[in-house]
Image (cartoon, rainbow, N blue to C red; front, top):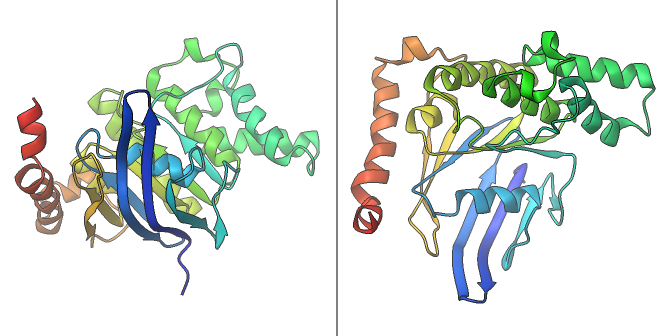
Length: 266
């Protein structure tokens, strides 16, 4: 049976004036429809490179990537990306930033009123309807990131790709947006692949955690199934033995078996 996303024997080698850099080797990964998968590992292990390959922003040196049984050869609206930097256009309002994406995807098939309604619905989904007329410089970092997520969701993507979307935020804002993301994914049943450095974030959000070995020539070391029921509540999970078991398993992989290279480089 075919998975929704398939990464088959992918290698990624970058060539520059300094020579060849082997970023990823022998990557095989399957993601099922509606699954939330996080990629975690030390800096330089190729997490964002793998996400960019799934997004179609780069092409693999070897191997093939499939989404819904079609080869990923370029970016497409069925795969929306949210980066750590919200990437909002500063001269547009929050509404206009989201509407721009909606228009690109649905402008040829829907009327103006439908496009407006779709845009407002996406902003309401992330609790940003009240700020529709504000420009990015008038709202906080966490609110900007909400608008970035709204823009991605407004395209009704089959896959939501998140590259450390909360990494630049303070701890309280990050926790709040993680909780909001849990609710949104619960409502939309989105397929999500997310890059993170945060072990607690990975365990809280994921169905499976893909743990990457250190680079260069990084690969998938282990895949951990997070067997915690949904919906999830961070307060209730804080002392849950199963949560602590999963958290320890990730920490053990990162800092006991794959932490020595980073420690030597520090």
